[in-house]
Image (cartoon, rainbow, N blue to C red; front, side):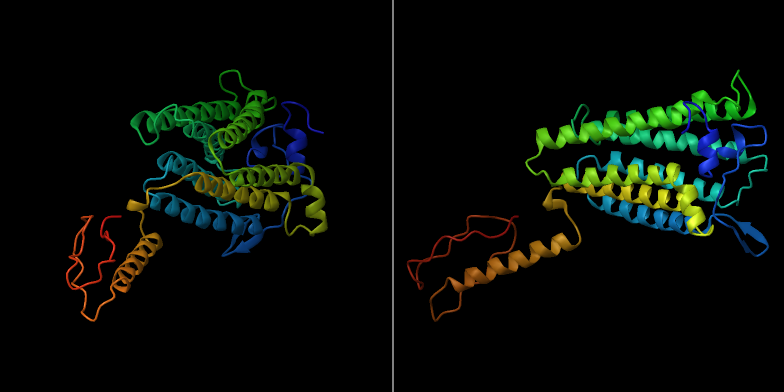
Length: 337
């Protein structure tokens, strides 16, 4: 059981990026970790986890593309910041976990400090996105966007400074007793996630008729919690059982990705966009509907004479002359969505 503020037990279980820099003068090595492979004379650590990181980068790119394609969806510009931050966290973690940036290099503390800062900024950005649906500030406005951007940058810089000061024994911080860093990683970030979760439940229950989005957010938080349990409690057992091919970091990364994907699914399920501005397949649906309406107009004529050509344009209220046609022909409207 890990003590409050203590990285020793945590780092003995799982190989976190922070472990070579805290706890002991020489860092902390886990009891069991995934074996490495050699590629072109370079040792690559955690190869299975790296594959998941690459998949996460691809999936995040796809999610960002779909978010940007929903031009009129509520909170589109706000939520996409969260996915950009998650992508940056994933990329830097890939560099650190794989050993591309070795733990013995001089730049390693800078990258780890940046990694921790980005993780905290990502949780902070997600928390602020939880308030977007309540419309305290209208989504898409400079107030809404820049409040998230500026505050996220401030959080990143503050945590980066705290982390680097801890690693270098600056400003009274000590890597052997990194209490402040532990609080940021586990208390602050955990509280941000919990508050976001509660906010979304309140939002769905109070403002939406559909309750299905609750399933998305419940799945998302469940995936994340399961990943953390596997990461911190069962990593050594998984590593021993799999004969060092994978460890808890592999499953933790998968579950985090699934949790992020459910955040996207939840946001997509609670947002609507104006169909007048929709693109792609939705536009094709409207075109087919228009053709069906035109066919219906022609079928209403009961005459041996061909009907006059349909008017072009977007006006409404067009009425056919009654001479030469059945008097029962109803008034038809065309054009305009």
